[in-house]
Length: 311
Image 1 (spheres, one colour):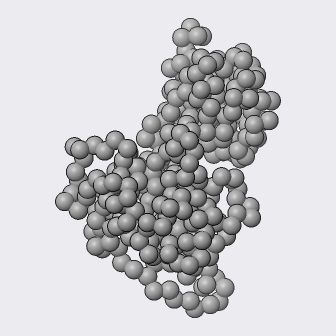
Image 2 (cartoon, one colour):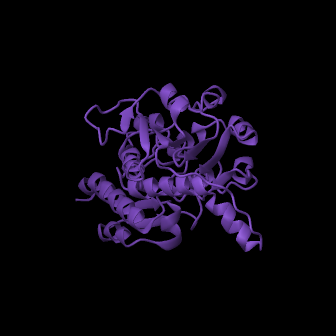
Image 3 (cartoon, one colour):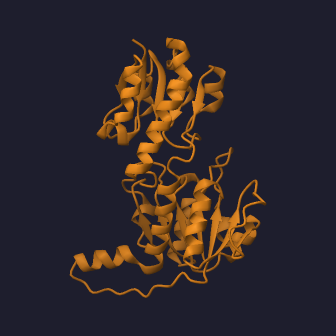
């Protein structure tokens, strides 16, 4: 019986009804360690004999793919594929599929939730009350403030709509800006430097660079407005962590919210522990609705690729 490896933590820990379509089609489901992101060694151990992989956010290296001698397709239950060695996959004839737009709503709502939390210092107030302290931090209102959105795809556009509903102004940067997208006279596409220099808050919704270089390195962070809020629900390597910590220490960046880390869980991570940082455990697409959409799309992509093989 042909096998399909399933690795997303949300599925290996909780299961999902959409997987029944794979078993009904005659495939054996192989689960990674429940609730854990598989290591390279675990992938090397489990991939042999698998014709398909329903993948999460784990890195899939050339070494892991070399062990996957029968693998035909990797189907992500999300949109990011920068953790996959695409050159190695292509050289082995392995198709890579994405669940386009499946988690956009969840990520966009989290980004706005984090923005509101930063503006009103909600987490610190909660912690203080639970510690029998009465600590009131003066916040700001978002009306009239400028939100900078880096990456104006499905997620970025939803964030834009939410921000406009909060009476914010929006500056957006995209590698290929869509001139037909003009949701309001309070919205405009601008250069990256203009966005950095004029935004009161910045939220990242773009992939990492091909060279894996930080978008917000020390030089870029120095261009930001004093007291800016920074939100990253996209990729950990978009920001130079040491440079950001320095900016947080002197309050040039007023506060940051981070949902993604190079190592997860981020035990001992300096950024996650910083008092000016709200840290969340990679929950952007971790909603009931997003998971349902993503898993169903990932399963559909697997069957679309593999069904001609079994018929």
